[in-house]
Image (tube, rainbow, N blue to C red; front, side, top):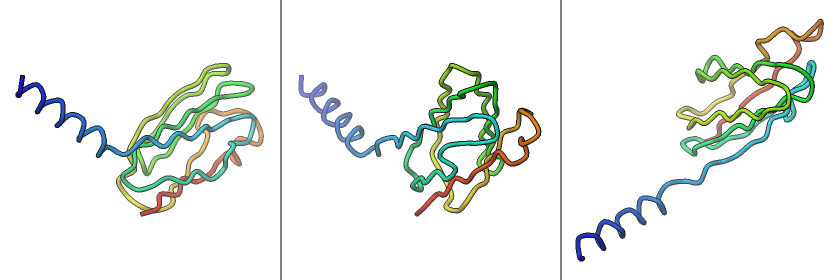
Length: 111
């Protein structure tokens, strides 16, 4: 009985010490991401909930090693923990028309 109580207490401490995930919803539509700037905290787990309003888009953050395809009508979750502070460019990497090259934004990771 004592052993299971100690394990339970230890597990509770681990859960209490773990930072909560920061969830950010990102919407894609032709030539635009909303929000265009995503602010995250260094070392805090993040979940990007990506959705498309019109067609298939891509979401790529090469410097952070993130990449996802976003089919219309579905939500794609990208989980990661930012390990370095700075500003990181993201862009659509699935061609969506003549304004495609302007479809980008920034992830800002603050210490």
